[in-house]
Length: 209
Image (cartoon, rainbow, N blue to C red; front, side, top):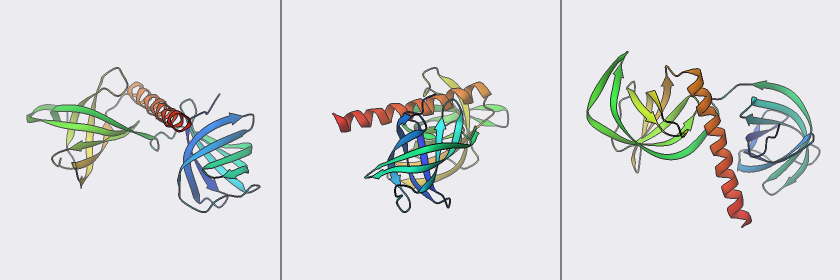
């Protein structure tokens, strides 16, 4: 099973989060991590470390490791020893730019047509929720019906607005899915990880081209 281009996080032995990025290469019991973001002190060769990889097949896989390379934005990790593997999907989300028109909301199980449709843009997606950009503020607690097109096969989902924050484009709304089937959740999780790989591969091609 390959982790190539899967998102990952690297921690110090103390538990301090040091870097977030993706698996650039995998060989035998080692990984080469390309770091997108740094959040702590740097690692030196020979240091003990912990790496978490988000796998489409196994979920969140955590390994104890030893640093074999530490240069620029790349961290080599060897001697991988499996610590745990759990299906922790909520931590993985992918940026998108998907316009949608919302025409209905819910009160309990009752589906109600909106007086005026809402034009929104889905700006990121995870297996458990998404963020909507909208020109107007949507009240927290509102349940909206959305025909989500992210996975290629449209699925009707209900999103519960948790919070909103104003920005230059209007308002960003953090939402969670409600009453979602296990199959739809699996499809979204697979889409999120595949889209992350696609976007990272695209960035790598641009850098190397």
